[in-house]
Length: 171
Image 1 (spheres, helix red, strand yellow):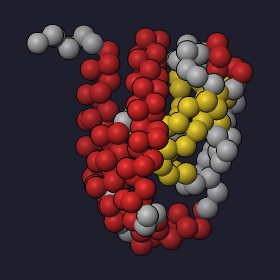
Image 2: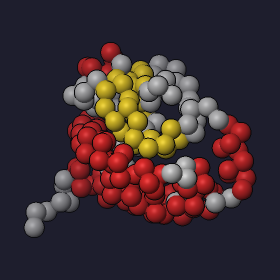
Image 3: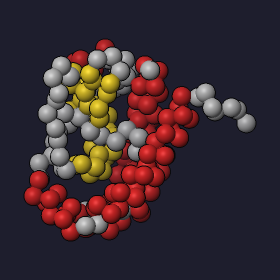
Image 4: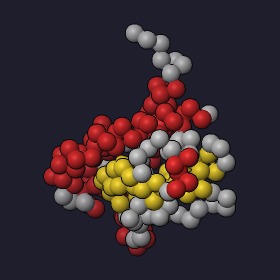
């Protein structure tokens, strides 16, 4: 078996796994509270859940992380909000719902609204781990998941891995 201790993708995947452990505990508590649901329903705005398309900006075409990506691609989304860009940020991607899907500050500081780390296995896990939250907001998701995954998951998985590899290469 190959030594993965110096493999940037393996290190990235391990880091994401460790972050998810802590996040999942917090998120399960927060999202199961009535207060969380009430606030999310009041906020409204830029709500996306499932695989949705993002479109790269002209600035992204020469970006170290997103420059090799297709101009538009599906990627997993799970958010009910949006944000304004910080000063001197370069917008790199947008969607029909949220103008700010990705940006860069300086050479290697990136922020993403979409979940490029969420491959099909992660989406399946989230669907199960957060089943009450998911079905409360999107009751038809368990029925839609197989068809949406068949349409979008392979391309989204490839895109997410390409983003992760390109970002790790910048640092």
